[in-house]
Length: 635
Image (cartoon, rainbow, N blue to C red):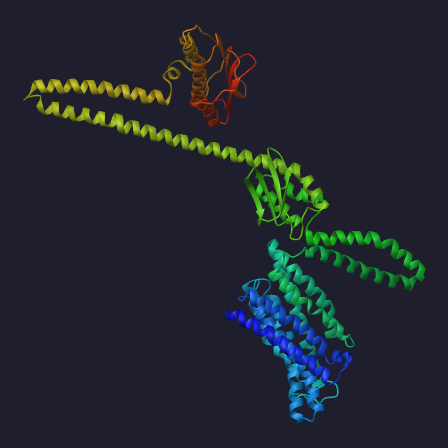
């Protein structure tokens, strides 16, 4: 609350000083032109704009130094505006000469503090109140330290207010220091240009929010420099150019508080285009007039103006909105298609978009930039959509942007497919690792809880039998019987664990004969009806152990499903080998609706997926069908 009170007090002070300035100006009967020539009007307009915009920033963002700099600097400017007519009133009213001289002195020394110090320094602190980087600190200090030179130049000058004596601290030989004063003017212009360069650097490195803020400043600063620099360096430039200065505090207040008010890029694009076009047309017309007649020059300029305007418009829009040539953007994106996130970032950077993302349903699988409140969606492939964040001030995508995105839809669809395939592969790998660790945990539990205690008991019983063999032969015999029983149990447990790791039929017979054996054992359905199983297996040759186990488990599970759930009378088990091993179990059971996946079907699919394959399960035109494809690298 204290900071808001101070900001309000500075705004109230600005109002009071402005009222005093206007009242005293009317009291001494100055005309508008006299007030303009003595800088009353310009200082009043500039001071009010800076004071009010600064107080507004300080009210809403008290931690931002620029608000306080503007609020204080604007009041200094207004004090100058009030002191000019006040000095005239004191002089005409018969006050002591010293009083009028003091007023003239304050008039001369107040406004340069604002224009020479606070205005240049503020450019280095925008838009966040901090320097662009620590490397700018020496330059910031240099501008602050050399600011008194500008104040000294203005304050010690002799030509101040018309028909009034000079101030108290005037240098009699002020003109003899012309070189120093020229250096002061150059120093001010250079400090402003470097401040503008700092803004440009922030614009290039900033995100979409920072760029939206800085475009307001850059536009206002460009207009001010174009107007004020000639006034500083060229004698005879009209004072009215100073009325461009209030654009800066207004733009800064908007950039800090309401930078999303409208799309300033549209204003700048049109302004720059037509400004450059007007300048080039005038220069071209003037040069042609020197060589040709006025009519011929006008015709040539008119014929060249339209195509020149189109080229300038494209160049300016490329600067502000980014690349809008579809082929150029596509060529830039084409080099990064292997990485979807990099592709999206390239699109965002090239088109100056705040946010670009790819979403599948409600899930965002890749994005670049800062999330935008307003966005549009464009379909890609595989159910994916390209989500494009709209620039501030835009409600829809421009036609040129849509053309670029239409051309990029194909390459981005490829990148999306590659990204989703990579994600699926990564998920499969994670599932494989999880399955492996679960299998290891199961083995550890079986060995620890089953074989471990059993073998420990065998060892203890054997030790007890050894200790009692001389003193208690009958007990020794009983103990050895228990050792023999427990040993057989342990052997059976080991066989069970080994069988779980790899079916014994595979180890003894191989995949083909193991399946034939399993088929020969399947002769009836669960309801007792006969079932005929035919095995059609081509010559397979040696296969990786994982492929053999998966094929055997899938085939036997499919046969079990036929036995338990089907009404088939015959089943055909077919294996063939190309670049992959294909396992088919086809029955002639009655047609039914889609199968409801149970533990068996889920297990078959998971076994195929672990090896990078697939398993299709369900009814077919002839009956039930299970088709598993297992990618194979032959050994």
